[in-house]
Image (tube, rainbow, N blue to C red):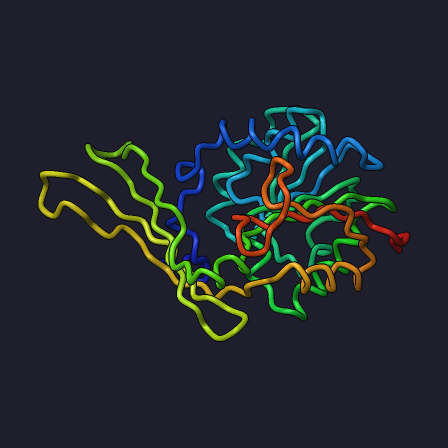
Amino acid sequence: MTEEQRDDPYHRVDYRRMIAWPARIEREAPFLGRFLAAAPDPSVLDLGCGTGEHADFLASQGFRTVGIDRSEAQITKAREYEGRHGEAGPRFVVGDFTALGEHTSERFGGAIWLGNGLPHLEDDELATALDGLAERLLPGGVLVLQLLNYERIRAHGIRHLPLNFRDDPAEPGEIVFLRLMTPDGSRHVRFNPTTLALRPGAEPAVELKGAREVRLRTWSRRALETALTAAGFAVREIHGDMIGGDYEAELSTDLVMVARLSTPSA
């Protein structure tokens, strides 16, 4: 294992195969389109872009898109989408959310931050990332945030996310994606993305392919609203999913926040 892989907890987690992307994109497209259509420019910065499916879709819709992620492995996968839609992109860079200005000098009409990227940041890091994002957005820029609803997870003592099964392209059997969580104090969980090979009838029938541990900040609605406001964003809508459902703290699977940059960026 290389030094870069040791520093990348997701280098063995193939999110492209883990998620049924065509169905997810079809489900979320109307919601994203409604907000991004109102952005001051048809351009989107995708924070925590993972393997690039959202950025690729938005580029196909005519948005100039740039994706950024800390994971070298995820960006390597994402770059397979580069050049598919001409000047619209998408383009992808490995980078730190707290140093956006070092990775792109472009300005964008909107930004999306979907999935598990934001919980990797502690309070000071999130403040720095949001300040940097405000500098990269045009005045009136739109931000769509989505993450797990950790208030529900804590309220119900949830220890794992739903299992995902995919056919194994390398040999007979299936790949199982298991994501375990262990509480770690009042504001964190230990997150263990794990990949198993399932081969019924073989010996062994289940084999561990990869497992890592990441400590995540369990951001709440109130804490995120405070951080967004401090960075110059006004929260416009809050939902419990990516199709516009109501948010209920102890019931909603996700926390989705839509904000607009309310002060001119420098």
